[in-house]
Length: 213
Ligand SMILES: Cc1cc2nc3c(=O)[nH]c(=O)nc-3n(C[C@H](O)[C@H](O)[C@H](O)COP(=O)(O)O)c2cc1C
Image (cartoon, rainbow, N blue to C red; front, side, top):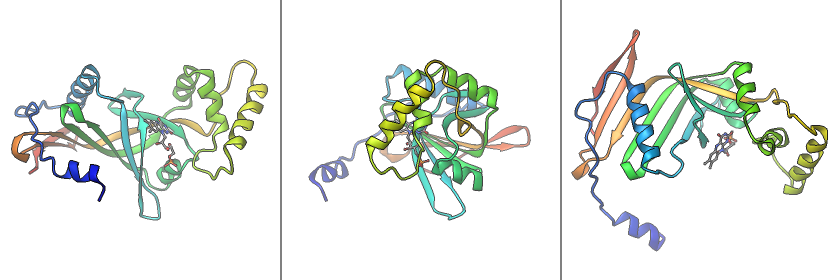
């Protein structure tokens, strides 16, 4: 084991977060409050989340993506629809998002079904991106084998010539929205007696339960 990992293993730090004594009825409002607190608390990459998907292989895969919007109870991120995550979501729309805000000792797990957002909404977001990112979305055949970095850069140069002004959105790039069926809020507490509050969608409302830490 590395010395650094050993130091972390032996650091039995205590958690002293706010408690979740009276959780609100709606997990989306609690999420918004926690998200705003993470931004205000200058968490690094507050809107980065770990997205886990499982395709037909049954083997889970995870990666970080950015939360770009919350709309009508959904959590929206953007990516290449032909990527590994895109393929897996085609095969199985169930996914989990995990946020970790270490300064606040908070974790939120959101599970639900993912679907593509409308082409108009993807167009609107794509057009708001810097030109370099727009060209990058065309240049990167995300998740496919790349033989050299030079190959990618040469594609980018060609694309800059092909699209001298406006860059259209590639059909294979756009947004996904996850509609939560379950949201779990974890708040670090002293003596490892952490708070875990789970919201399960039930009819048109939410049922709240607590779980042992
Ligand atoms: C901080 C951070 C933010 C990222 N944001 C995105 C994103 O919003 N969309 C995206 O497609 N990839 C994003 N990535 C790259 C992904 O983690 C991943 O490498 C890529 O989407 C390919 O994943 P896949 O092959 O599993 O589909 C981000 C990576 C990091 C570290």
